[in-house]
Length: 146
Image 1: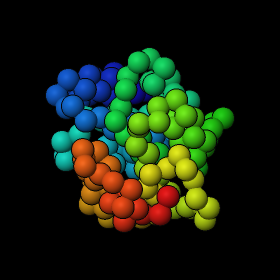
Image 2: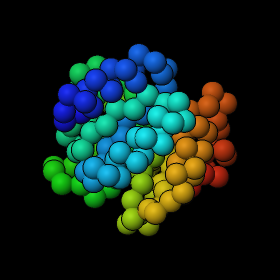
Image 3: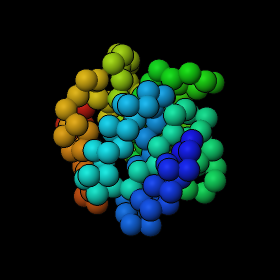
Image 4: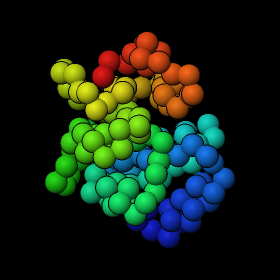
């Protein structure tokens, strides 16, 4: 949401789509690819390039259904810290972490971890499963190791 084009796209996405995904990645091309894939699958998408900007979006009252975040980003918080903050403030929000350097330890705040590079269909499947009304811990655990 760093320019008027993204701001306009945000408003359109939020009006037309009932399921919203907050995408956080400092690499603009990666973020755009994730956002485009999610939009093509019918989700409303909010894009930010840092954990701080994502937290500002949440503080503004926007309530996404799911967070997709990279781990390594510049700024005060990395993606795992963002996931913890978001999980504590919004325990019903689902969280997907995507990174080339996934941690080896479990993270209670994270529902699914996907290693980059990944097939975009894998991300779409994870988002669809996490946002489906009947998802269970078993269906979620089959998607990736949190």
